[in-house]
Length: 371
Image (cartoon, rainbow, N blue to C red; front, top):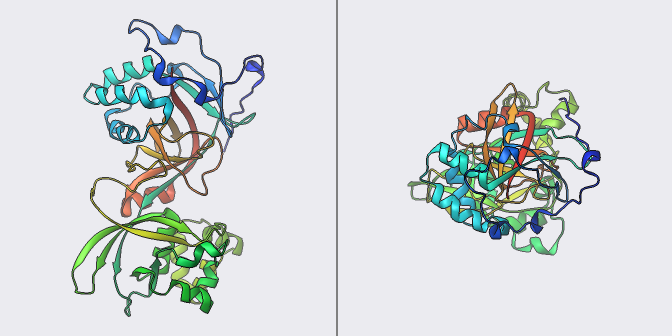
C-alpha cells in the first residue's frame, strides 16, 4: 500500500491549536454569499495521535455526489451526545434534517471546515477495515447441538488483572467455577462464538427453555484484559492458509477438528457480554460514543486521533469497495489505533459479514470541524 507522506515544514511557523480550544458553539455562521473556497485557511490543529491540515472543500473526493440524507440519521444520533464543539452545530443539524441534499451540502460548506487527518510527521493514508453485527442461532440451554457458552462477566473478575486466558478459561477448574451460572446462551460452533467476540456484539435468535423463540442483542460488557491475537495471523504463521479470511479459517477448522482449540487458544483474549432487548431492528448496536451505529455511515476510530461524534469525510478505493462519503466517528476498537485508521460498520447478517471480512484497503480521512 502506497503512503502519501505529509510534512509539517510548511506550517512550522503557525501555532498548532487543540481542537477543544476552538469555541464551535459561540461562532457565528458565515454569510450565505461568502465563497468559502476563496477564504484564507485556518491554522492546523493537533490531536494526541494526529495532525489536522486545513484544506478546501473542493479537495474532498466525491463531495458533490454523496447522498447526504443517508448520513443524516447517523449525525442526529451523534447529536444525542454531542461533543462540546458540536453543541451549537447540532441544533442546526436537526433543523437541516428536512432540507434537500443541495441545501445540506451548502450548509456544511458554510458551517464546517475540512481538515485532512494524517499521522504526526507521517502519512495521510492509512487502513480501512470493516466490522459487522453477526446474527446467530442459539439455545438458552446446553444440549447435544449447543455446547459453546457465551458468558456474562464473572463476579470475581475485578480481583484478578488480567483475568484468565481463553485457554485457562477452558481448562482450569478455578476459571470454570467462576463462570458457572454466568452463561447467557449456547452456540453450536466455537468459531461463531469467536466471531461474536471479535465483532463485540451480535443478534441471537434464542430458543428458550419452553421452546419459544426470541431475538435479543448481546452487547460488549467486558474482557479478560488479555491481549488480542488474530487467529488468522496464527494460521498464516503456521503455513496453514494463504489468506486469513473467515472462509479460509472455517475451511481449515473443518479439515482439522483436533486442532481447533489450539487455534482458538492462540488468541488469549475473551469477551464477555450483556443481554439487551432488540428494540429497533433497523439500528445497530451502541458504539463507544453511546449511540446506535448506522450501517454504511458509522466508523470506529482511534479516539486520540478523532473525537467521538465528529463528522468525517471518508475516501477509500480498492478491490472490495469504492467509498467517498460522509460518516460519523461513533465507535472504537482494540485494533483501531493510529491517526488514519477506521473500521467501517457494514450492518448485520451474512452479507454484511461478507463485506466486512473482505474490506482491507487504503484510506484517507478528513474531519469536518466547526468554523
